[in-house]
Amino acid sequence: MATTPKKFTLKSSDGETFEVEESVAVESQTIKHMIEDDCADNEIPLPNVTSKILAKVIEYCRKHVESDAEKDKLATSSDESLKTWDADFVKVDQNTLFDLILAANYLNIKGLLDLTCQTVADMIKGKTPEEIRKTFNIKNDFTPEEEEEVRRENQWAFE
Image 1 (cartoon, helix red, strand yellow):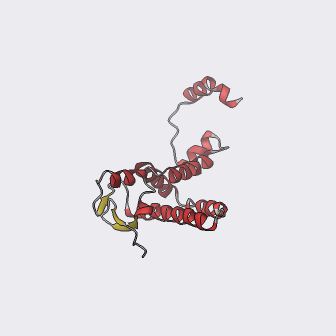
Image 2: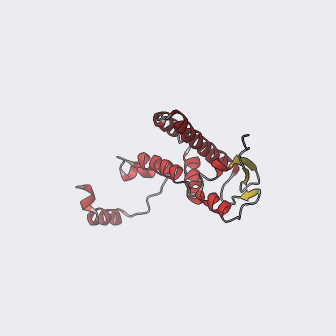
Image 3: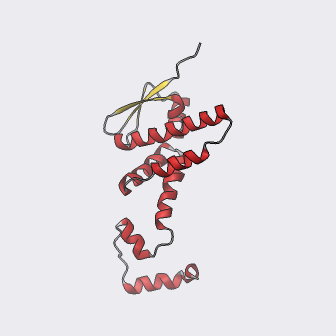
């Protein structure tokens, strides 16, 4: 007889609750440690994660748990389809991407943190400082003299 998987309720900072299977919840090392240390009753509060972002995080964790289960059953790699899914998953607006980075860091979900940080790195790669400022809406607070001094000090990076 199959046992029903244990479920946990995750509560976002704005009060919304999400019921998830233990296998999905423990993708987060933070939640896993709470469960192991008996700090997780039936409801786990996540004060640093909004419902919008928590829903995305759960979607990511579910997909990765399912993908791992498929790999075990089929003994074939579904890595390519998962990579495609991951690439589509991070096609979000900048604020959502940054919120996902913060949530992945807070919840200690290495795969999600790596994916989101790599996405930001790819947004920066090959761009001039001015293009990066424009992409991320960063104001240049250096005077031309200060900027020249920084360039001189870091000339090795431009060679």
